[in-house]
Image (cartoon, rainbow, N blue to C red):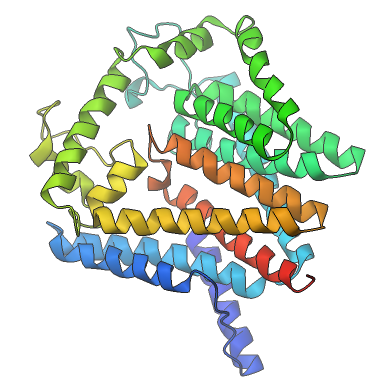
Length: 377
């Protein structure tokens, strides 16, 4: 469905250019660095053990991300248009969350997915994932949308809107708890700390409420929280092993990597832990190591530069804008990206197409807002 609507949007953009007889393609401050990222990613295909697969995966995914980015930048040229886009994202999150609650109420069998160490967490029988493929992906999505809603809620002056947005944050937060995603819980702590730093230090008091809330949590939540500092469960042990294997990949091929999308193909050669060639491992459970492994250390550096550049641009707008809605949105985007960055140390949720599209969409929103905002400075 995302491909269908992305294709439709692209076709309408092309039609608009044909009708207007103009090339409606704006330059952005990051065209060159994005082009470098595209080139380095393409170059990694040459060293992939399955070049046909890597090429197919590359143009299918990279093409999608670049289209989303430039489609937003070149066609959303007013605050009203951007508001409709963001409210569409928030509305979609409500639907995703309600389906997650439905899963929790009616039950969903997770035994076949091996998402939980049964011996370590005997009380944990249900982890919701809604319309995403696993609980960690849903949790990452919820962290992003909670960050956006909180930023808008803090800056809006209308009491009705503020109340609505913070009710949304509470609902999303409840759903986040039911994912039992420890990495996302840590991301929320980081997001709260960033809000305290960027908006108001009084927000940091929220962090002190966490120990109090723990007292009212069910046993399964308590066990997951306590396990954050316990590396002996299967999930933590596997992650550490994957990181060791991925570092070995990086050391062997530091410049071009092992090939775009080729991690699952190459992993059996570096399987120091499972020693089972029938098990497919698709990503390293660490965003930074995974990207460096697949497209090389230069590719990782360029990708981090893209994240830094857009975050800095969002901070510039946040600092200088007089529009409260824009300020709230930029604050939300900054904290959302920082949440993704924190979760990247223990997982790689942008391996998922939906989450990567959301990242590139938010990056495009930053540039679209910056373009609109500078016209009024």
